[in-house]
Amino acid sequence: MKKILFLFMLPFLALAGPKETVKIKTSAICEMCKERIEKNLALTKGVAKSDLNLDDKVITVEYDSAKIDAAGIRKAISETGYDADEVKAVAKDYSKLPNCCKKKD
Image (cartoon, rainbow, N blue to C red; front, side):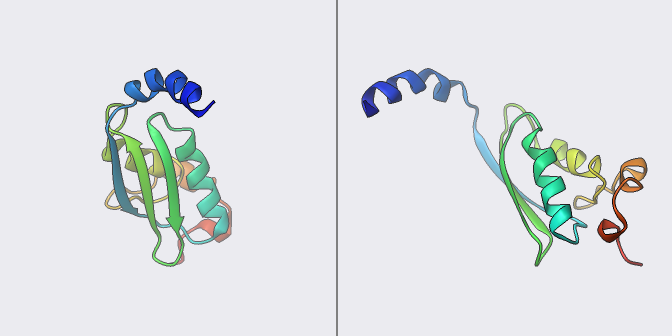
């Protein structure tokens, strides 16, 4: 059965592009931030998986470099309302965040 499943999946595995990993510093604060960013990245074409560590505010993203690049991932995070390395959060998206998710001055 495993061989049949593998043979069925082989064409799809061949279509997958090269996998890359990037670490991005965010302005995330709480668990809600983590859920919001990871959910939006899961909906981003080319992103395979992401994991945000709230202790250091760094998100590790595995992605298909044939479909998206690190700059595109940073842009997706900024459009979620959070800073992503040197890319600042989009103001209109930041304003929609709950108060607990906004940066403290």
